[in-house]
Image (tube, rainbow, N blue to C red; front, side):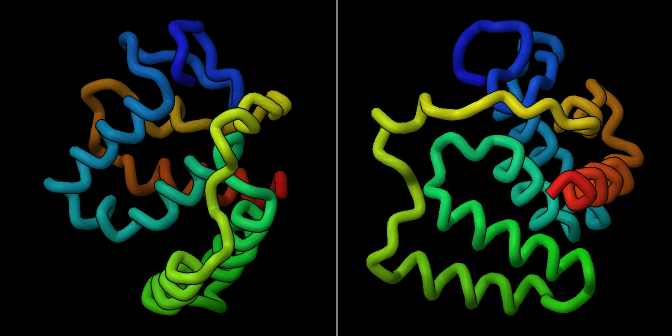
Length: 142
């Protein structure tokens, strides 16, 4: 959501107090500093954001993220195992990001819950629960 539109062209979320989706993600990251429960959900926060904002990623990268995201939610894979898997791919020759010219070829997908449901301005309390709800909602849509 890089332009000044009122809604995100990738996920349909509304701006909150001028913050686009990436700005909201950044604010949630700030909240993590003071909230160990939210910090423990960092993988879900970032993975959920990226799954709802896939335009810059290759199909293979999104499919890999989808796979580890669902495995994590099912309790089949932990964060340390995911980090090892991601490091393996990041150090390889496979591309994760699309060339900038190809990033505009995406279709808006309306999600029942977006980052705008997690980032409630000046309401960090309960954010970890909102992240888990957001992630479960995404899993149901995949």
